[in-house]
Image 1 (cartoon, rainbow, N blue to C red):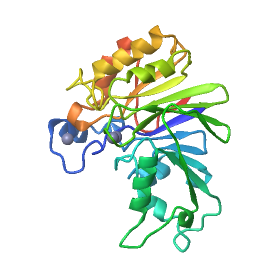
Image 2 (image 1 turned 180 degrees about the vertical axis):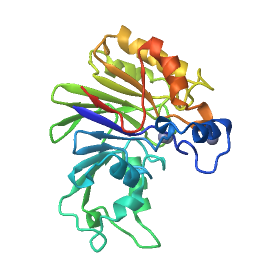
Image 3 (image 1 turned 30 degrees about the vertical axis):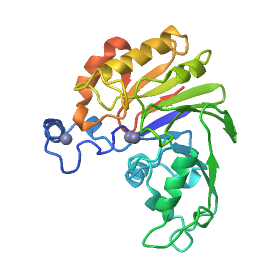
Image 4 (image 1 turned 60 degrees about the vertical axis):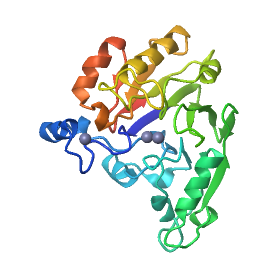
Length: 278
Ligand SMILES: [Zn+2]
Ligand SMILES: [Zn+2]
Ligand SMILES: [Zn+2]
């Protein structure tokens, strides 16, 4: 399984467009490309996306991704940094020639919000009109889509809005999509028991400034706690790639600072474009 991390920022991106906070100013001063963070999205092999946010066009062009090969998009939740209906709307006949259908997977709530956002300027657009098939997933119920195994897990995030984490398997390899969330809920740990994870992407929104944050999003110390528990449970071993991602400028997102913090814990720090072969 090849996983490419297309975006590593929380909602506002880094540097946030109009923000003059210390962190954003420092990013602009440094000119380190790893500090420029687009909104969270992951490419699995060539045919699967996890989340499709407002930076999809720039991610596709920057990393030479052919989005016509995408057969499915899994949505973690409906927050705007993870879901951009407008760019799906351009699949409509007359705007684009799309000859292959795409499946859109997520919770009932997430897909409902996506459908409502597809309707622009008072015109109602159906999934069928953008050659898309919605596939509803439920937490803790295993699903398959093609050769992909999918286990949705409940995220500690956006209460009442059915956000999901995903355990995604293909060809004997397993990826844990662990954002957006706080410290994993007890039932998530129960479902992770006995599983082997080859790569885990862990929410680090609150980063170094709010390192102990545990609810809603995670700070850096909480990411370490999750990584340690995954190792203790045998879900992760020396071959597993544990990766912190989804950084907010509000939490501090300077790449070299994050690397210095996480290196002793054997946790990698994501940057846009990073590819993991597992
Ligand atoms: Zn987010
Ligand atoms: Zn800022
Ligand atoms: Zn969110």
